[in-house]
Length: 510
Image (cartoon, rainbow, N blue to C red):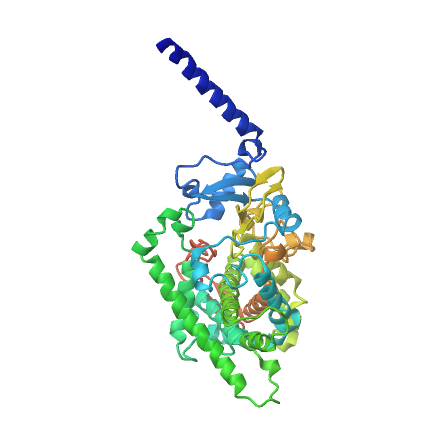
């Protein structure tokens, strides 16, 4: 009996194992038959999270040199693919844009923006399509952007006045970073809300600025629970959940007050009071809500979500792009001189830059382009998510896979750019067709496709005008004792300068 068992048990085991292998390899859905993108080795539980480091765009660029322009990572329990070349970016953001147009649910923005009822973080679907259409057609069209021209010109004039006041002597050090934050925040506040919330001009000014700063900090905070669900409890212990709830509640109360103020102000006006030329973005959104011409109803939470995006995208990234541009120009005196000469020549005897002048400044536009190439404000863009199984470059990408597009690495790809680490605006004169509007996939600082940034025109209008006025009015030099311009990058989802840009600004003689 014992010898019989010794024979039968191994035979049965072998038979079951053979059946298992047959089922495994014959299953058309088996991962064994699917060609997955190359992937670095992963650790238990955390997967590849430990390989991201403090600067994920730099770490992922290094990994892509070993594993290729399309590689698979496992971020805890979240599968993700990382794209580091223009060809793969084109496949995802153009050829298969619809499949890769969803957003993964990220808990911190989801709490702050009413369950992702904004544009940036909303899942792909009818709500997102309707809200984005409203923004593109009514809030951020070329005509609407031009209607706010006087605000941009007034605020950039105030920037110049503030620099003159801070540079009262040849030894005075000016904190350009603070002033650039101020001009972008004040411009967006006037455009979106109808008034500024700085310098004590409105009740709750300091509170508003602190809330904005904290929201931007939270947006770049690593949340372990998004990648390893069973670690969500740590957010209660470390206070992250309480902090997010507090900030979300405070910002909601502020935005609710803004909406009600605008609604009451409108209701208090005579019917024949036509102030459309002075209408801010909240007025426009409330008008769309009142008219309710389509089946889509724009509720108050959606209005507040759109306003939130205007501040998140309109201030933080706009200011970041402008700060890096000014820093790069000052670091390269020959470029600063050439830029100053162009601006001075175009302006002539007027002694003041207008937005019409900007179209006659190709070198200024090339400087802005080059700065955005080296310093895209969001180096890895906002992650996408696949809605169904797909093949990219011959590799299988499963549904609900996160897609990380490393715009920073793509813009420094030596296959696409000559001397990619060098700041050289002249490169854009060799190929004038390359632009940042999402048609050239080697250069996507604002993204591309359905999920591309809809506010490009507004952001560039602010930045180009501010840069031109700075070059017309001042010479800039290092503070006494500084040996070189500090170009260190800060940690976070938005690529700020780590340390403020301190300068000695010397006004040009009139």
